[in-house]
Amino acid sequence: MVVEYEDSDTAAALREKAHEFVQNEVIPVEREYLGDGPVPHEEIEDLRAGAQEKGIFCPQIDEEFGGGGYNFRDVLPLFEEAGKSLLGQAAMRVDAPDEGNMHTLEMFGSDEQQEEWLKPLVAGEIRSGFSMTEPMQGAGSDPKMMQTTAEKDGDEWVINGHKWWTTQGDEADLLLVMARTDMDAHPYEGTSIILVPMDTDGVEVVEPTPHLGQSLMEESHAEIRYDDVRVPEENLLGPENQGFAISQERLGPARLTHCMRFSGMAERALGIAKEYMQDRSAFGSQLSEKQAQRFAIAEKETQLHAARTMVRHAAEKIARGEQARIEVAMSKYYTANVVQETIDLALQACGGAGISRHLPLADFYESVRAFRIIDGADEVHKRSIAREAFEEENVPEGELTNLPRF
Image (tube, rainbow, N blue to C red; front, side, top):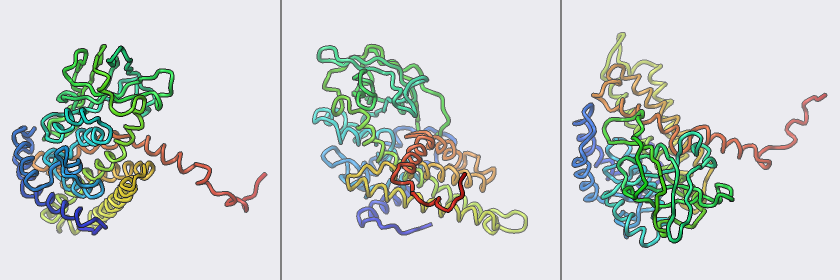
């Protein structure tokens, strides 16, 4: 369903190019491998070449590093189109976690770091992982529980720790490792991000973590140990002890791009469901004529519109240089639940066809559940929203005047 938003002409043009690319080039490849993935890397390389020809390859990164040089607000609609296929994100180089890591390197990397790591990342020549989450009882939803440390020894950092759930960690060439660098300071003021090449001595991938997920794209989440890992002091990313501030600069936009990718997935899922409901008859009429089904679709169309509007509002504040912390939290929490419910409805509407691998809905269903956990679990965002809601200036006085009291 088409709803008009106040997107710029540039954003609209990018979206149209991305839409045509996904429909005409990406989805045909997806259909070829449904139920028989993962898609070979050579196919992804061919799609990336097509995206480059159309000027929609890595549009969010500056041109000097190989990207398109568009601003954050203008690329959001393209992210949504990319999300309509699990292959679209990698094809246009807007896929997590590399997308967020590239953004972080662009904002905080030194000239040398950008030359060595950012340009190859943009080109798709290497992969990266953001290594923050730790096993129990380490950092997770509460990052203050960080146990991994990095200590200075001459002109080197020495890293020791144990990480878990490092997305793409099994294939990564570069890891962005969060570690405590000042044990006397609060973790928010004493943690840094250090760039660690995967082939550094002491980096051990314990195992790829088995997980719920789609089957079309290679997707690993690794458990990694760091045992006296030594890297040069110039591998520090951004200022020392500012790792949490940097991660927040990374996570705000990354959460919104996730929202748009998954809302695109949900929109396509609804499209599949509507086509199926018009094609399938039962109990004397088409499924699309059943009022309960029609109302359920209408509800999800409305909620997806609300989610897209929330994301655009938060993105505009970020584009103006604001953090938009609560707006991002609301967008991420709300969108994650809406897209999960939407894809669940689409799968249910398609019945047995929905759980087959002949349609992408089964892959969508397995992929979307993680969205309520990654980049901050629902509970973390609700905690932030509730804390803001109960700040003194947000609680009125005098509204209870007429209530009787003992």
